[in-house]
Length: 247
Image 1: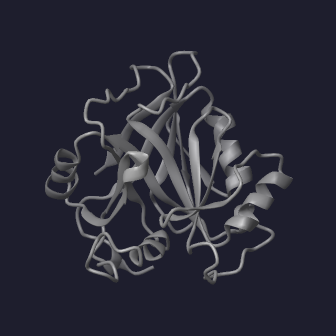
Image 2: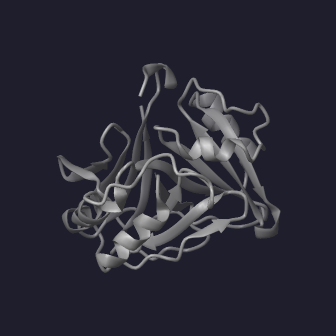
C-alpha cells in the first residue's frame, strides 16, 4: 500500500455502532470474519490488518435490541475479499448463516449475512463471477484472508446535497456511480484518495472490479429514487448507527 493512494488532511476513521454487548459482538467479528479488536475506552475498534478504518462498537444505553428497517439511514458494512465461494463455505462450516453467493446485476459477486445483533454485512468478491481471482484463499484464515472493510453504506433521498457535503465540504472524491433503476436506487461511492478510476466515465462497469480491490474504505450512498421516503435515525442511547468518524 502506497501513501499516494490517500489525500492529505481528512481521514475516514470508521463507523460507530451502538450495540448491546460490544465484547460479545467483537468476538464474532474476530473469530468468524478475521478482524482484529482493540479496546479504546468503553468502545471496541475492529479493523483488518493494514487498515486503520474501524468498525467501532460502543455500548448502547437502552436494552432494546437493534431492529433494522429498509428506511434506516444506515444500511450495512461491506467487506471485500478475493474468493467469495471459499468465504461462504468457511462461514457455513463455522455454523454462521450466509446467503448463497450471486452475481448481482453488473455490480458484483456478493453474499449477505447478519451479525448476532442483527447488523447487515455484505461480502463482495474482488472480481465478478467467472473472472479470474486475484489471489488464492488461505484456508487457515477466516474468510480466506485478504479482507478489507471496504464500504460503509448509508441511504439518502438527496444525492445532490450529499455529494456537495462529501466532496466539497469533506474533501472526498466521487469514484463510481452505479444506477439500478429497476430496484429504485443508485449507488454512489466516495473515498479519501488521490487515485483515479481506470475509466474516466464514473458509470463504467469496468471500474467496478477495480473499486472492489481498493485498499481503503469508501462511503457508499444508496440514493433512493422516491424522495418522499422518510429516513429513520437511531434514537439517542438506542442500539444502531451512531455516526461516521471523520477527522
